[in-house]
Image (cartoon, rainbow, N blue to C red; front, side, top):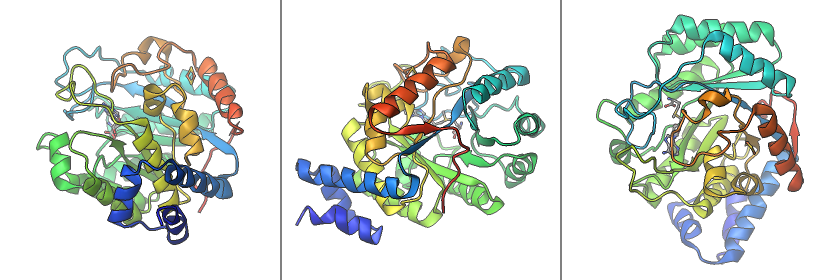
Length: 346
Ligand code: SAM
Ligand code: FES
């Protein structure tokens, strides 16, 4: 009977709370293998063996927020703060363009130094120089007007993980100034404006349960995001969660597969965090249904300063090495990294 479950999820694109619990807790390798096989098949039916690459540019590690899990939270006085100039960002894009990247992801803490005008100027300039590229922003919670302004300046996509769709769990992860209602509203606004929108969560964050995860899945079904970022929670030594356990490879892979099955067209990255908890984590993520990788394009001299969690990989590698390494990794499992904007396929 257990073996029926992945098939049933693939057919109905739905999962019950009980099925979720069974899949997350099963010790039966036949079930997890079947889940993985079906998720991989589903991803291949839509995206083939092509893996989309995003050049990640971490342009500021200043942040006004104080999320309990995050290494660049404002009260971490040990974080060595930096900001990239427009020229530095453009230089990352130039390197990336020459390496075949056609999506640039500008990610940062919520840094008030970068006003809406700044952000619009950065986006506009990148799109002027590289009209055929996609620009993704990942700069946190903003007003609808700000999101609209960035969109008008040419931004194509926006990543804002919801972190958890459970109110009580959200309060355990964030100080009281932040609210799940506000964050969900940001995501609705992003969708309404016309962004390819990404939500997502960490696997194994403190206080996460089968029930909170089930809510995450219900939220995904409701929002219908184009992208879903999930990776393991990894503790950072200078945060309130320093002593918490990290999320596991196995649970992250199971959730990637489940998400591929219930929301088949999603752009689903095998994250750096997944590569950090296991040397073959990103390859395993692709084989479990992911179809995107996001190598780092940030200048090497700031890489180790954007530390959201401990032991982050690739901090010493030039963009070219990372790109080549990624291409080789994907090839080793029968996939191909492509030079493509990598838009959502409806
Ligand atoms: N400030 C923007 C925002 O909040 O969306 C973008 C940057 S934020 C650092 C990007 C993501 O990093 C968060 O959504 C969170 O899920 C992830 N993250 C933060 N701390 C982490 C940790 N300790 N382990 C794994 N992922 C973490
Ligand atoms: Fe960065 Fe392998 S992906 S060095």
